[in-house]
Length: 226
Image (cartoon, rainbow, N blue to C red):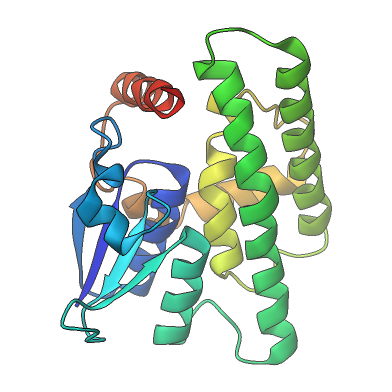
C-alpha cells in the first residue's frame, strides 16, 4: 500500500495528480503546514528536509516501516518506475523527461516560490527583489512556451515532466507572473488542466474555496518566514 503525506501546495499537487493518473490505491494523510506538523520529529524521521510531500511504500518492508521517498520530483520518478508509466523506457526518452523534471525542481519551482514569498508574504516590499524573481519566472514561462511550440507536451508524450510543471504554472496569478502572449503555454495549460485525473488531484487533500485557499496559503507562507 502507498501512503502519501502531503498538503495543498504545488509540490503536493504534483504527487496527488500522479497518483490519480496512475489510478492505484493509496492512503492520503493531510499534513498541516500551519501547525508546522512537517517539522515534528516523527515526520522528520521520514523526510529529513521537513517539507511536504513524503511517499511511503509499505510494500517495501524496511524495518517494517516501509520505504520513504521525499522530494516531489523523486516521488514522481519513483512512481513512474514502479508502475511503468509516464516515463519512457528508452535512454533518450527517459533523459528528456527527467531533464524537464530537474528544470522544474531547480528553476520553475524555486523562482515562482520566491516570487510568491516576496509578492505575498514578506512584510517589507522590496521592488528590486520582486522584479528579479518575477522576471525570472516569466523567462521560464517563455522557455516553456518555446518548447511547446515544437511539441504537444514538454518531453513528447504526456509525462511526469508535465505533471511536475503544471501545478506551478497554475499558480501564476498568486505569484503575480503574467502569462499573456504565450499561446503555446496557454494551450498546454488548458489541455493538461482538462485531464480528469489532474482535476481530481487538485482537490486533494481537501477542496477549499478560493477565499479559504488564499487565506490559508497566506498564513502558511508567513509561518514559513517566522
